[in-house]
Length: 119
Image 1 (cartoon, rainbow, N blue to C red):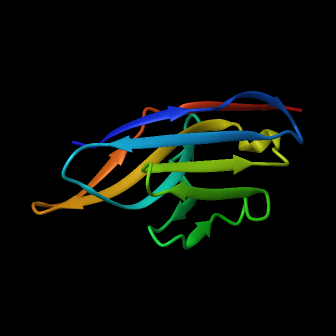
Image 2 (image 1 turned 90 degrees about the horizontal axis):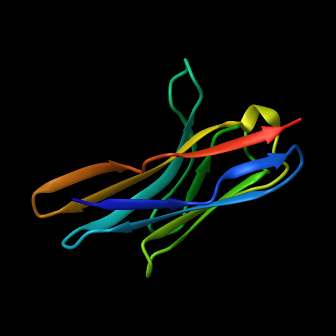
């Protein structure tokens, strides 16, 4: 099992910034890709950003230039710096971690953290 603990999120005015973090723990696993997804009521969960272990990042078009994903491999932690926030960024944000061990691969989800951007 890989456990994920989120922090960050909250309420911010449009144009403001927030930082999310997600720490992964679990013995015997190699942490591979890490990322963030978001979901609003009635809609499917959508990709925000992902980052490989070597630091290659991928972003949704809607957040390019405003959000930055990064990670600390020594701490098994992924971060999402969100700048120039817009009301349409309001959603529940979920950390996603792909890991592997001798048995195979595993995808884990964090509990979700709410981000609300007021206009």
